[in-house]
Length: 106
Image (cartoon, rainbow, N blue to C red; front, top):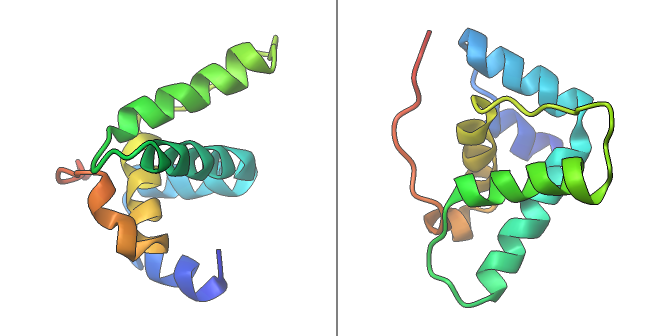
């Protein structure tokens, strides 16, 4: 992702949940790579829309089961909405693939 895309995706005033997401995102770039990979695979299957929750759970499965992560790597459920919105900001032509609701603010 380019710096320009990242700057437009990162809100100027952030809630606690947003700050936690961006820190997690910075510390775990492989999660974003997997989210994009699995979302593209779902698109390639011919689906018009899909659940970002399903993508998120597949990322969890991959990081936990397929990689045999015995350390118990955790991904907070609060990050789902932010990964979805990051995908939409990064790929505006495919933003329709995930439907979103308003994000809870703290």
